[in-house]
Image (cartoon, rainbow, N blue to C red; front, side):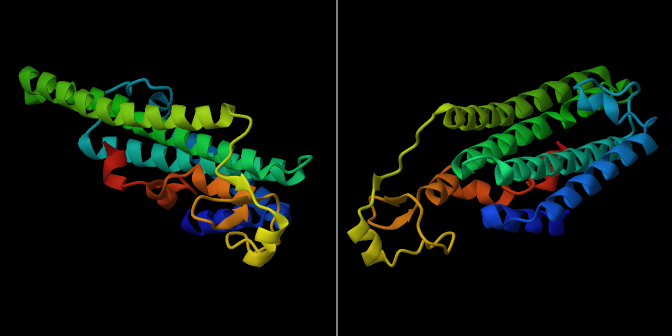
Length: 240
């Protein structure tokens, strides 16, 4: 997972020079693994939480952890396979709109984070219905859990709609188009992609970058860069 994530980051940065064979290989490997695991564990209540339904029976604690961890990992792998497809599409698309590519990747990332936040809810909901701990305890724990989950869910919904709004905008300007004199004075080399500047943008801080590079990085908040490639967040948080 982590090695493929690094490869995916590098392929994203390569833009027009990215290797289709590498992206196709990652996509096939992940999708085969996802299908194989769900087929192998088809009787272990893995599929019900994927469609936001509780497991058929109340799972023991460690089995609940197992269901959540497996589903979370496989959803991340499926998301990475889909991102590879997007990278292949934008590599071969006419015009190669990398700004739109960055917006799409950001939207997919926030959508997956939102979905992963919901994945544990059906499992823990069923687990807390266990009357062996007492009906009062079960009701209290269910209410506390749903309250906690709602707060994190609202935050992720807001992030998703912000990314969706950014995708719906046709033009995004982060500064003014730089003149040829300003570009020559800056060295005519983008510090982000390390290539000759394409559609250079002069920011308020007086730095000049390619418009595609600026728009890609501006779409992702610094706190989210750690998880941009594969949706990785705290494993403990994702379990709950």
